[in-house]
Image 1: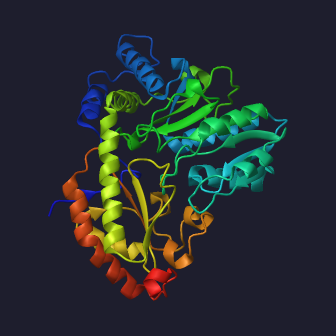
Image 2: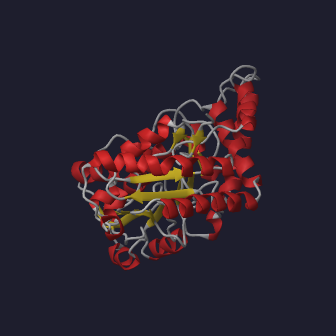
Length: 393
């Protein structure tokens, strides 16, 4: 039985070219990148090269605008905390109701422990931001607005260029968690008013445990981690040279990937969705159909438990996710689907299928073969009455 991996929003397989680029920095070039002797020189040069590769991927003007971190969560935390620490006269933060937990858990903590005022912007039934509420929330007290580029569960893309411009008009900083967007949509931070942007290597066929934060030149930045002078004094700690090299190589490969690849992935995603909706009643696609990541399908199966569906798929060698991977194991609907006001018994049956360049037509056919039975079994054991009329009838 050939396994099928459709959980690329959680983690992607590392590209062979990335692993090959990293290996010498575990063994041959093992020196500390901050050392002044010959053993540190190759490592320092590799870090500089990787910084340039990441700069090119996001469209930053200067390589020094890239700060290497341990991943998206650290980058998100660093951006928000820096904005508050560097601008003490402003004590309000704006977020969307569907942000990743890396943002929401932090601002909830700050509200309780530091008295930070958090303005949470709602979304509509397609996961689209309430722009009027966003405009109304911006004020002279806003330190930073942090709105994701694309949602990790539904794939819905937010108008971050417009949001950033509005924040700048209000004198606030703008940060975007672009972890799911990087490598999947074109980015050009120079063409926007985005002040800070987070990314993570393991979402674009790079290694885990390494990411980056873009900080626009001129933006005041207060370090999250203090100690040594690494990263121009903005992020202390010995550089993770193999990881940085891996991120750089993944960025280079992503930038060189032909646009037709995204089209191929979108075609496979659309074929999966169409096949599911044809074969399985009481199902629908969550998110903005007109403006989504090309690889993401969040399909809701009413009156079924998502965990039970995943169990059946796993038996067949198919990997997917119920909502966000960070919320796996929860018996409550994801906060994203709650914010979208998806009916309770439907939200509990949401499954996220996230594709990559590695997926094939055979993968989609296999899922469509297994999924109807998996959903039927999950509905038998759920004990739920259907909320959707088509299923109830």
